[in-house]
Length: 68
Image 1 (cartoon, rainbow, N blue to C red):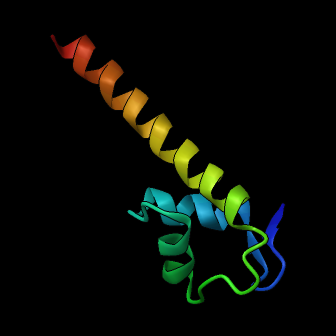
Image 2 (image 1 turned 30 degrees about the vertical axis):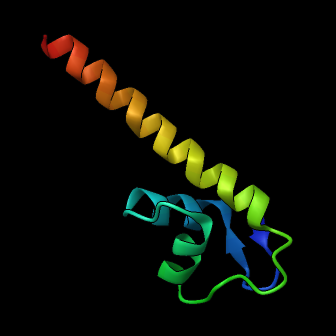
């Protein structure tokens, strides 16, 4: 789905930027080539970035517990 209509960014692009190291929505946008324009999408983009990092943290914790 489109998250940012100003830059035509999709949720998958924002999630991919987060997986590649972006820690915030603005960092994800910068990694994609443009910062946010109107800002109307930042709440949704932030949720996507947070979900990616929460999933990574959970998988790292599960791996760590399994290794113990």
